[in-house]
Image (cartoon, rainbow, N blue to C red; front, side):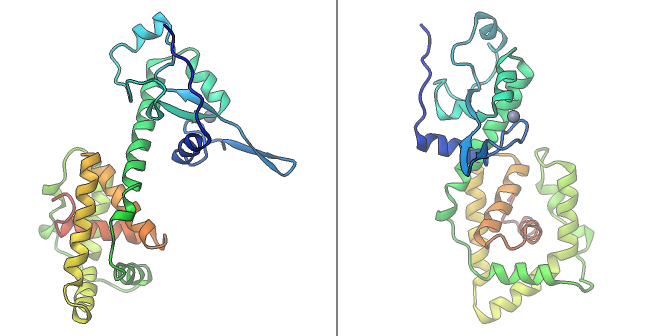
Length: 251
Ligand SMILES: [Zn+2]
């Protein structure tokens, strides 16, 4: 018996389109075009595991993980530009299946975490730290290399390149950020502890979705960035490095 193709509602399509941020996740072409002042869609909803696989495809994918047991589930479909859809389906290859599986898996993970943003507050004072970091131009007191905790708290899900950046950020900015928090706490006692608990809470939320330290790092950076009006992504990275050293993240 063959599976019938599901017609996705306008809202389901909107969700899928938003998930890929309006671009083909394979070739990055826009999934719409403008003609005579009107916007037209230029995408097709592709099944990652095929809707009705041929016996050859069943054999090819028999040991592969699936994103859902229901082939028509929103977790098993993704908008692609017509060219990439055609190439993805014909001929089907195991490499492309794995590639699209990974892309979709991380998109699902990202939307799950984004959907919880509104439940996790962050004190406004974090903006003071971001602004001071962004405007900082002088020579800063560095943290001694021997005081670093990143090394013992990281595992093999944290790529070396990112680990080096975190180590650099901690060495360079830890003492500076600490001094800003001391000042903030003088005016509003326990502000730092409140903030640290909020970061820790969001860290644990991320851990429910993924164990990858790289993904968790980027998720916390994106959360703070979104919560602070997208003021400075770089400053958010430095803040997360601070909280790694301070043990709220990767604890
Ligand atoms: Zn494409």
